[in-house]
Image (cartoon, rainbow, N blue to C red; front, side, top):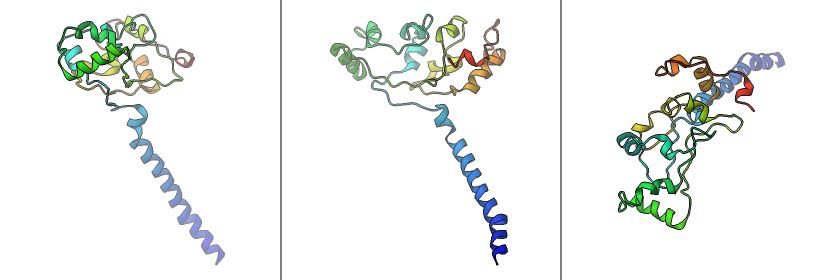
Length: 189
């Protein structure tokens, strides 16, 4: 009798249990992938801002608002002062501009929610990429067509290495481009 119970446990229960564990892991891994990679992330912002209007239709360069990106490691989120360079005059009666003006007059920063974020343990320098003429859209997607910005590409080690290893495929608009560094210390400092 004991042998039959042991045979049943080894032949049926153990493989079935291992299959359920493996299937659960794989399902969870693939279903949660966009959440882990950040793809599709689009938080509600305190002020509705259209990149499609500003960067697209009006053709305002990314660097006008995201100052320092050509000289600094970070692309700074615009301060209310930058917005007010135009909006002290332009479209002052619109509800979102009224909110913007309120932040400005109270001297409060706009609590923008960050959309694109590289993991804390990885080092990334925007200026190196910008000064190599790599277009912002290569990583951030076609922002000029986004009414509401969302993350369209994963900011993962695999994505970065893919671009570093095959820049001619990922950056076809650049005539002269070198492969990027692949050594661990380039990003993990």
